[in-house]
Image (cartoon, rainbow, N blue to C red; front, side, top):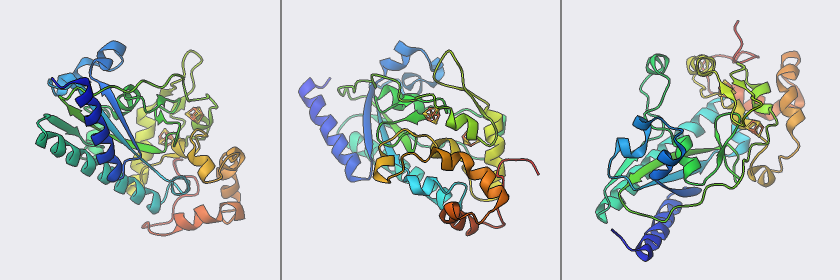
Length: 288
Ligand code: SF4
Ligand code: SF4
């Protein structure tokens, strides 16, 4: 057992450690929150995976909005892959750091699947970073099934470390961040997100989303991420002076179908043209 003073000092040390290594956000969830909320099946909870777990440390790295806006593109794919790698490195480094201090820890890497075939057979992760980020107070789950954060909306990726150290927990977000604008659902090229009247989180057709992912993997420019691009939530929109862009997102597909050189989309189209083996279809996601 560590005292509450030691716990607070350890928390500060961990936050410093993670931020010095590129984390934009760090949150702390007590393992009991998975049981309290009962949303995650028992076998997928931290204590089932690593019985010594007292705290789950969740780290987030942001995805810069102007790159996300070019999706699908080689540039967006690179950003996604680099961010995942950095998060995995950070989780492993933090685990070793905590172990050296005598706190048994266990990293859960970002994307834990080996092939598209594995996803087709069972499109479920052994551990979900989305509920972990919610229980660590970093955001709330939006209609698009992603964590929305006040800082970056859904344009942030997460990784988790389980530890036996008892570290003061962060409070959860006090209110839903999703405003149910429905943009993610209406602009999803596969119509994989269905809004619901009775709750914020939409129904999600995993198979349809996976189909999109498979098409983009063939073109070497996965993932899709349109539902993270268009979400209006996040202070990153202020940084990039990107408020009030809804109309531009809504008209994009139709405009480019008529004129792939439309000047208002020139930058995004330029990035999309290069670095992939063949020309992207004008309507990514639709069947030929
Ligand atoms: S990633 Fe693309 S296909 Fe999947 S839900 Fe989001 S917008 Fe739809
Ligand atoms: S795009 Fe709108 S409905 Fe979808 S997650 Fe963001 S705020 Fe919610």
